[in-house]
Image (cartoon, rainbow, N blue to C red):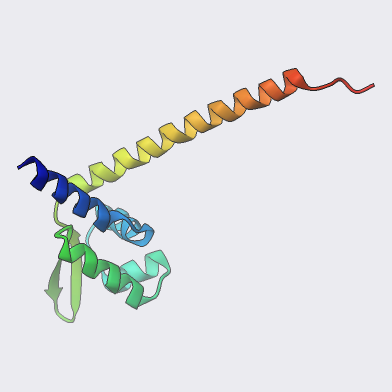
Length: 117
């Protein structure tokens, strides 16, 4: 069972491993949208958006419902929004750590600087 869970997680994170897919998920976290709306908001070609939506659908991360001649996409699990928020927080933590390291590096360089006459 543990191996099954690890495989699921690996496949799940593989499905998220594309910047356009992440952007699509962020948009869908704000509310359901059709392909044209997503395409306009991300500023990408329809074929690229459709391709990424196909991957997300295949992994059961989003679902599509036909309404007239449009397909409306929605997040299958609202916890995806929470996952993206956690990822954003982890990024911010790394950014804070990097800034702290750079500040320390700058202080060390200033301490080692040879005074100019």
